[in-house]
Length: 328
Image (spheres, rainbow, N blue to C red):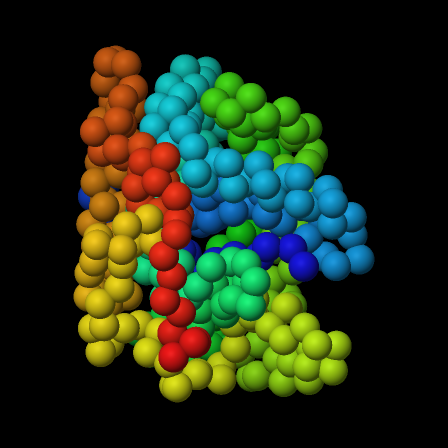
């Protein structure tokens, strides 16, 4: 089964940041190309969606998805420094505006991931062995809770495809840009058409991963049990059946650790992490706007600290510690 992250919480966070922005070069770009901004809020996750359907070539899916993992784990500073430098030098103003909106969203993905992913990894469990689907189960329930408990919305009123629904021009421009960054920063060579297909598949598969009336999920879970693969697909589905058995938001304030260091502890709730990510996301937009407005070399090192998307820590500190709520 392909790795399929969830999109809703990232999209909502990006919208919350946008709603706090003053008028600026970046704000104007987002206003002009909101779809590019929202797609950007999925960050490197777009690479997980190439050949994502089960009947497609899963070996090719894994190859491209692994590239997405590399972007999550390495060269964080280099990626944003080179990406914004590249955008600054663009002569085509239309393409430039699309990419400003996209990279602004990409910053939002990093802001939420670097703060909240350690929480989800530790409390969800390792993506391996008996807990291999529980990380996605956790993220799916977070999406459900964000819509219903936090935003107080009817799930049927939200259309997740809006978070990835770029037009053809935006998709083409973003794919070409991402292909260039993969080569320049990571030494990864992909055809732009691969990235375009991944973006298109992203939108299509969301039709199967959002179940606001909880109709598909029970049927799929019954099939999973029959095939002895519980949660293999249903862990990725965001549905309206809120699992109240587990304190997914950590409202009880249980202590949790960064998975790289058992002594690096916190008792923050998910909502506190989410609010902190909005603050960080605003800082990123401010830094991006400053970089675009001035002629100095682009350098986000102090802001980013080379912190990985998954651990919130620099490379070299691997995840070792987990305490899944689903095993308690």
